[in-house]
Length: 550
Image (tube, rainbow, N blue to C red; front, side):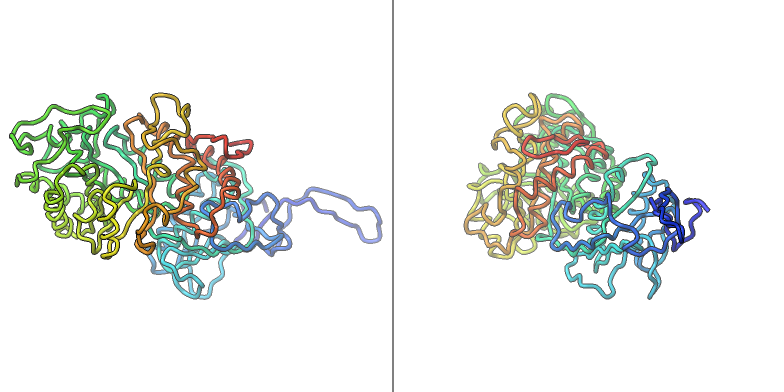
């Protein structure tokens, strides 16, 4: 029997064995393949990734010495019976592993009382997990078992398992094993429920394959929201039925007249589903009342004088890109946009923009967002806006994106005290389009208006210290933002985003007492070979001790 014919329940391992012939004092060493029972002391854990190398840092790690699980050809992936969520996570794991391993890895139903060998995804039942996004991951020589109480927890456990397997698991072609996981237990849950990545596809358009690739990478590090910035002065990037000029005219180009394009509703739906299948929820941003030049160039009736603007391709925000706040056509447009986007997006939030509107009189701003909030509610969603809109949006159930102190601070705090939530995205630390230093990346890639930001800078901040007077319990989580006026494709986007986005992921996940740059940089360095295997174009920052193979 060869390895490909091994029956379930047995693991064939190639082992250097010392065979002693009875009555003979000479030991004969030979390389043989033997069938062994799957118990820990027989397998060892040589070559396995330490459980302590995970990013973001787990809450609790316990390693079992001299024990490892080796994924074999005869193994399967098991999911709790009757659970669509468990089956979805199991299908994702199996699909992830089939390409590099070449194994069939059928997805099977986990029956009550069974103790199968392979990978087990158990939803509910007896476990110590109490957080909706928490999970418990147990590795024995027979199985890797991920237990959780909710779908999100299973996907978070899967993200951890992905990092515990060899880096070659990210390859898209069949590769020789072994596929070993260190024995032990990880019990884990996030500090914050919102861990977001904002991707701007408006200033320079990024097509669907690029967005999918970005989703793949953020999902590896337990980022659970993709905030997709779809509209800005330079481009309208989503098809809206009965408003075809929005994409025909408004989506034709971008900053500098380059990188035009848009998503059909079918393409956008495909992105939403792709993200959800990896544990990521899409939040669309539809902008307003500023940053709307692309719409104003598409339809004359949206302008106060009834005349369409010329398309705008400038680098900075358009001085003419403000909606006519007293015009019924404005709200006809926004009703159509919010309604169609809400219907295409199963997530809870619609982001309505609101940034850089400080020069609009407060009363006008309040009136606009009161109307927009009613439209968001009408279409079954919760409202999310930039901090400039805080106080203009209803506090209850709303969420505010904080990006810089000194802008509307009092109203941000008042909204938080009235029950609103705040996502912390300080531009000096989390705006990934900022350069690493004055020379990297080279011109013309990267901004510096918020300063430059090394990888250590991206890690060296605390959400609770960004806005004095903000109630700590109002912080929903953290977000990194990647604006694309200096980005022309996915490779430049990745070079700026990674590895700094991993810093933000850890700040959002790990408990505050666990944050330590010196230990983080070692764990971050271990991600280098994984990012390389996944063909992610990350920046090999000099303040990180990248290993050979990064």
